[in-house]
Image (cartoon, rainbow, N blue to C red; front, side):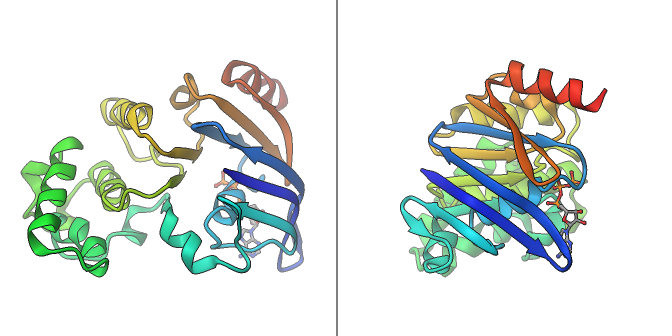
Length: 224
Ligand SMILES: Nc1ncnc2c1ncn2[C@@H]1O[C@H](COP(=O)(O)OP(=O)(O)OP(=O)(O)O)[C@@H](O)[C@H]1O
């Protein structure tokens, strides 16, 4: 469970989030809103990448200000730009990297890497250089490298921006089957159709918080 209580975030001179209070218990939560409204900042609060200037953020009961390292281990974070996340030369090595740091035995690491790449359609690219992948394939690779760690919560910042329709649908399918709580910041409204809850952010505040159809309707009116 994620709880934000009267959260303000100031970055430089700007108050980017202004009094956000929400408790997120649903399995799939979407966050939408105009460019610059504060969505990414909200996402980054959830794994302690950004800390509140005032107010509190707790994840599974832990305050992000006091338990940053533990929270980062439990909350997988997928950045918009996959190049920010891919750290190893080949596809399989990149997925294996985080598992190795956990000290898993080699055989188990190889098995989990293979299974993950197969599940997300990247098995044929296992030994290819990661920088030879297309943008969309890189986005899938970044997702594999996060999911292989089986995080308790997954936070994604615009995970489908580089994906074609087929791969967007594949990610939507992945999100449907994942057992963990997922929070997705996106401009891809179709991705949220069957989500449990959608927040609309405007100028640093949550201005709507409802089922997808209601929240997206509110957003469309707001942007008209
Ligand atoms: N490090 C920073 N220092 C100062 N201002 C920042 C910083 N990071 C973000 N901002 C500002 O905070 C505001 C919200 O940014 P944020 O990235 O959270 O918006 P967003 O809703 O995710 O936008 P987009 O849809 O364009 O990705 C923007 O006006 C941005 O310029």
